[in-house]
Image 1 (spheres, one colour):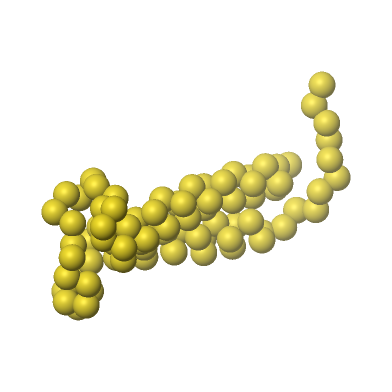
Image 2 (cartoon, rainbow, N blue to C red):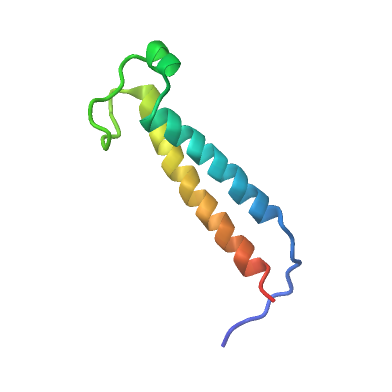
Length: 86
């Protein structure tokens, strides 16, 4: 039997989901599709686009952060949907 919890409807999880999505897109851009200035600053770009690159610290950090924040954004969007059900 389902339980009914008395929760207040708010938009805070939506704001977190949007913020985390922006961070995920920014990190994905820097990790997989860096600009020319980023390539000049960190020249050790990995040759494989699917590799997380164990020796490429800057790109590895951005790729892993993009994956984690993307998952967190999806979770927060799900929380928003569940909290704001009619």
